Length: 132
Image (cartoon, rainbow, N blue to C red; front, side, top):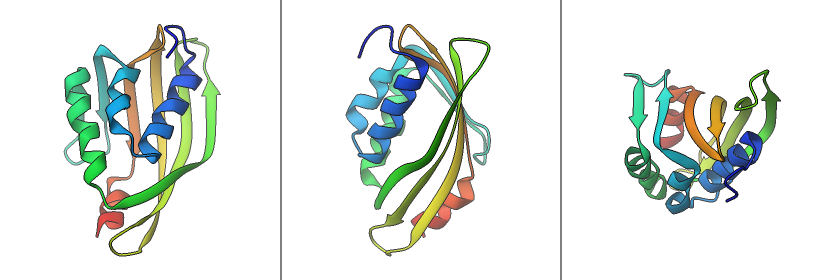
């Protein structure tokens, strides 16, 4: 990854890695001291540092899902480090066959080609329903 990858390019690598279920490369998209907050999780979740993100993404490989990102819209902001990305994870549970759609909004701050801060807004009930 280029040290100076744009926020949009880094975000697209992130959702590509998640949907392709390649968790091993995802922590490298983040700075060593990155902070990721999931405000809608119950309780709210805060991941600090690349190692915490490595543990978080490792769980991706255990989920019984196939999914893709769709309806991706990336909004530039007045701050060149910050983007707002709207998208949906659409997929199915490979154990039950149940289809799901989870809308998401990520607010990312990318500095020198690495995510330093992210607020990931998703409906945790939609993910829970997909896993049931």
